[in-house]
Image 1 (tube, rainbow, N blue to C red):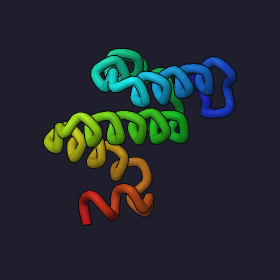
Image 2: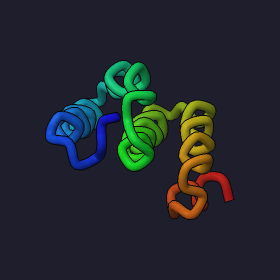
Image 3: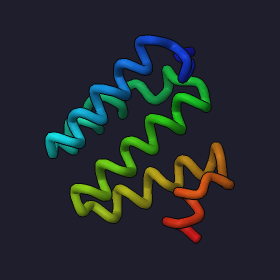
Image 4: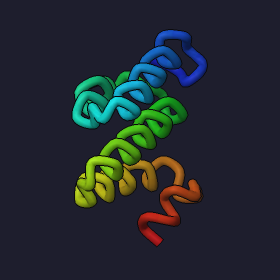
Amino acid sequence: MISGDCEEFKYLIELCQDARAAGNFELVMEMLEPRLDDFDDSARVQALVQMVYACDQAGDRHRCLAYAERIREIDPTLPLVERLLG
């Protein structure tokens, strides 16, 4: 399992943030989706949050909510989940 404290994971999140800033929203999903099962719960939530942000910025509400549902399965009290899913 890859944890959120792992340098490799931190670098991956930085790459995702850079991709979002550049408007490459689909790249975020391509970098994270195949690796979600490799992450511990903490890292998985962080990755899914990046995916929610990317989908939101891309205007893909359906996928945004689907990823928020996946976060809720791990951490239902996260403010982002409460804001999106009520």
